[in-house]
Length: 78
Image 1: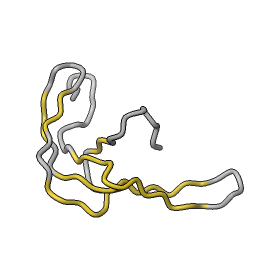
Image 2: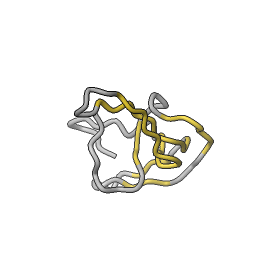
Image 3: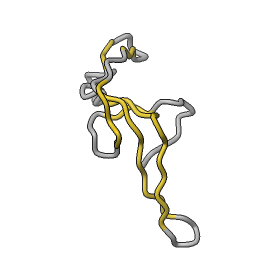
Image 4: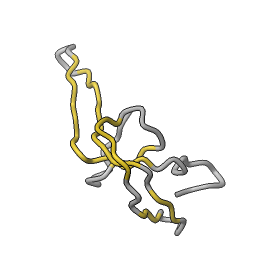
């Protein structure tokens, strides 16, 4: 499930839903003050099930940063 947070950039920890990737080292700071860097940037791909019982493919171009250490837990936050 993808929930829209209102941000123009999506952050993921792996390439599973990302295509057209290229290297990117954008620095990112989390709410807790921890800092990290992206490894890649690309397009977010999603397959959406509509109310009409159809599936459509959506691509959000150049909208996603891959940050492998962004995984959240009770003790670690980005």
